Length: 461
Image (cartoon, rainbow, N blue to C red; front, side, top):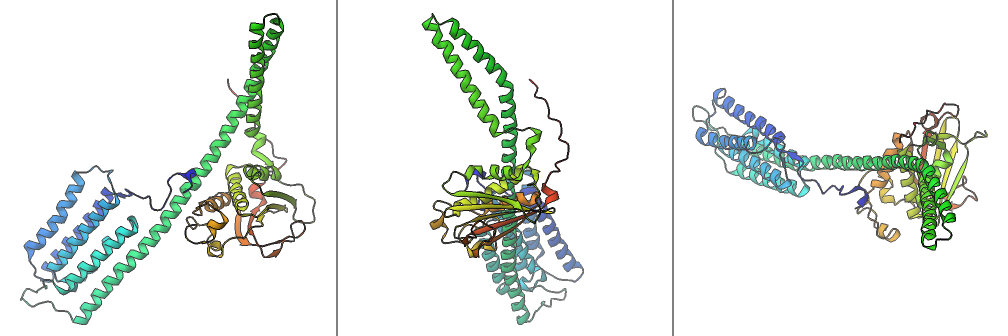
């Protein structure tokens, strides 16, 4: 688990089911049960043990009232609490079926509803348990039940083959709906987690950018007071030359003032938020994105050239946090897996900007090549990953975040493996490593060089 994004995992989902929402669904289900019983008795003359049926329905009604009045509206159920609620509903419905014809009752298929809802909200283990209980109970009421009778006492009889078919259809429906709903919910939850991680990454990058502006302004504003302190301290040191007990203190003030200016100068270089810096040449943006990974023992080469016969200068592009963070993630991945070299190859035409990030490593694993850019794909799909990247247990979030952020800037990404000489690189090296190909419409990312700059805001003291 990457600590950068906290506990963002598919297994860390508790108290996602809101009790009030589940209660409203149960009210609708109970209303349907009552309506079916009333219509069956009054309109079709069906006879059953009204007292026991009313007791079973009343038990469900009491549980609903208790959930409405004993718990606050914002109460959310844990996985165990929700499982017990669904288990109660399955048992109540099964008992009601036992009293009203068992498997011959056409409403027996409603036992699939709690399982399907549980599959979308609960963990796989809880869903499996509820599915097994539902299948066991529906099997029990298929062989032991109180038959329905008409007003004249005639038993509602169904052919054995239809009874078996009805049972088989319900069992298959429970299994299918549980698996289908679980898979759809897992995909949706994975995407929600990954989008949250992407938002956190972008927010962090934006905060760093904003902090850089504050640091730059601070460095600028404190420059003059520090220069004054240094000048006064130097003069005091000269005047106190005959006072050894005081001259050292004055010299210390001079040294500390110089140290403060050095610190603020370095901080100001790392984060100047001038309007001019919201745009930058392509090479500067690429250098900034790759900077944290340039001293990790791998050579990173930057190649920039026009993509056609023209001699157009490199474009001036928007220096956006999502662009820098996305490119940084891709460069990090290339450096992590490269044997010794990484190439960042950029070319442009009047309409498009293309950046290719290539490494001389083993390339993307065939098991994940078709799924790169999706979240949570790293675990268990590549048995050779620990050998190539010891101590790394990725979940695909880095690539997903990079892809999501870069697509927001208008990029189209393609992940592939090199296979032979790469003629666009110096010396046409023969590579089998990974390649990420990014393409932008130039109008989406470039800044018109003739466009007027916005006015810088003054720093208020």
